[in-house]
Amino acid sequence: MMERDFYKLVPLTKEDIQFFEYWLKEKCETGMRGVNQSTFDAFKKVANGNMIIQGMKNPTDEEKSHSLKLMIELEDNLHGDIENRAISIIRSRLKTLIFI
Image (cartoon, rainbow, N blue to C red):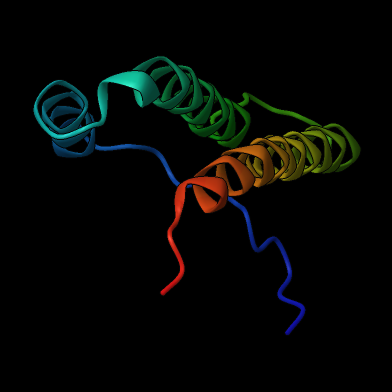
């Protein structure tokens, strides 16, 4: 079950961004738009950070390794924050369910 760098993000394509913007405007529940937008903005920053690290000019192996470890930790923290926020949303939704 354990997978190395499970949360590692890849750069977002132009199509990825266009799709998300369409979904956010047309399909996303109004009350969730702010949360989803801020989460997507965070994903874009992390994905772009990975690209910057990969494009570093003449880094030492130690510098590159340290930078990649920091990005992986940032990605893990981002996903952990999302999961923690989801708990309260799920609990709230469960309270509104009617059990037959």
